[in-house]
Image 1 (tube, rainbow, N blue to C red):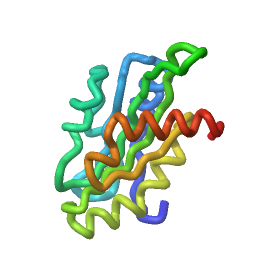
Image 2 (cartoon, rainbow, N blue to C red):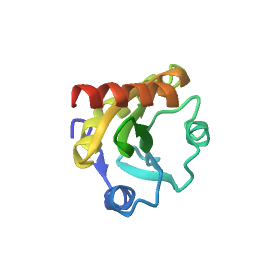
Image 3 (cartoon, helix red, strand yellow):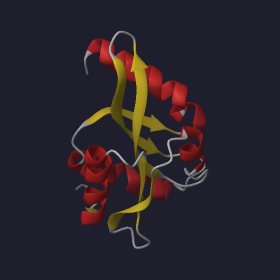
Image 4 (spheres, rainbow, N blue to C red):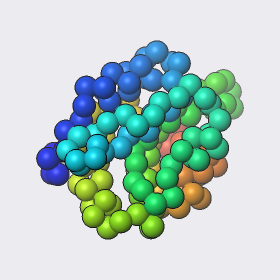
Amino acid sequence: MASGVQVTDDCLRTFQNLKLGKKLKYIIFNLNKELTEIVVEKSSEDSDYEKFIEELPTDGCRWAVYDFSFEKEGEGRRNKLCFISWAPDTARVKTKMVFASSRDGLRRKLDGIALEIQGTDLEEVSHKTGLSALLDCIVVVC
């Protein structure tokens, strides 16, 4: 990893639980206080996307995986995993730098992600934006 930050085993176990267990709806990842490890900050079974978005801090960076559930015409209900990099403009520059340089190390360990979104404001990570990007991706076969 470019930053030297490690991904904890708990991150991978929780991701596998979301991906295969189909009980969790989202996971929010953060750095520990020492900025040496990526840890699970929160996971939830709550499917309310607005509640998920409210969990993202207005002045801090996070990564998240959300299990989008949607209807595709003629194909029924589908689920796709979305990786979100959250770095609001109000976050400290040092924090943004560490998060940016650690992102790929986490992302590479999470197989099965259909879509990646980078957000600096709430509109960029809104349900409408994510769903639209997913549907575009499926049409193009990402």
